[in-house]
Image: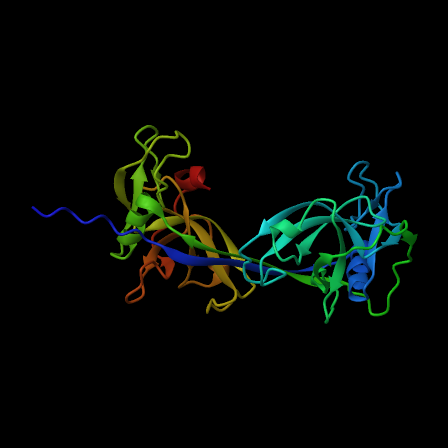
Length: 319
């Protein structure tokens, strides 16, 4: 007798990326424009503390802070951690230390990278200075990194009016997370069933709800779920949103509708795109069914079945 092969462990590289544009108030505008000009600005609270990076509201009193001051580009390391394997887009491509640096004239510390040959060259209390980037545009990356510095501490912060020519008034913040996802037993079974154009959930042995996609355990009762149940294929739109902004790498014309859909027999709504109907005719209670593309491993979208709308009481607990 031949031993059974272990089940395939599914893995997939995933990227979560969300670049967004934010406007800057007077304080943050002055801080980032100052970095472009090689000047480090902070704010002074009513209690006399100088905060770098600057904030717009006092973390103790919540009052607005507007008094700008200039501090030195030299400072002291207050704590640190060694990064032996830098990731893409980090400040340095070679191993470096993450450091909190209290710049001379400041009372709080700034987080950035320290270029050092190894962890033995870094210590709390060491003196450092800013290494400015060659090309500066008004961003925290205008500070290329910190580097060791042997000079003494310099004077206190000096008042600054925050006025610069061609000030920076907005930035694009790019958040990105790269990771490898492995779905586990329950979701692997769900994914494999989708490749056969079936939707399979798991029933809780205690409350008897059927979770789709399954999670391997009931989030309400906390017990394992192993009883597989095929649901759908049709379902009911419980709620929805109209998407008016085109997503990167998604070839769908806007506007379109993304909805929560309670498949028949499921105790949890999943989400999917609604097609085959004008976006302004989608509604709660609309009965829909999946549309599969040739060779697709999951429904491309859901379309109306032509059935009468579901009664609100039939799906209100799934909204």
